[in-house]
Image (cartoon, rainbow, N blue to C red):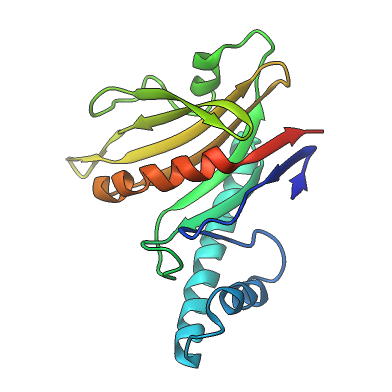
Length: 202
């Protein structure tokens, strides 16, 4: 897979369903569901599942376009996290994106280019090292606080982030959950997906 001089390979993972970011939404969704479940599923299941995959893909494509226009950051892939291996039910979405990084920037600058480091958080920002197929990365957990109609809401974002000032790029795999339990359950599969990713700039 490639785009804008960025190439990557993401091995299949039983908890992650890759969403089609190009092509006809309905056709691509139907083909995807058929490949995953067509051998054993009923026609009603295939129809219902294709509908939610297509609907999720449309929402994701709008988000991809918004981020590209507002932040000038391309999105190279998106995956839906399934609740169990190969169980086709909706879940949070992870995005693989890249952005510019200065040659003199460090990991803190790379992280600051991706998330708001001065935003109010519930608890500390958690950052740990992670060895991946693309070299050393950071795994990050943050719990931003939003106020909606006077209520304080705590949400969760998890990232795997590669800071490569030598290539003038920061690459990040990011998942955002409005439910903390869902965010916690996403930790291991996101780490596994990030650890398996191979990417390069050509």
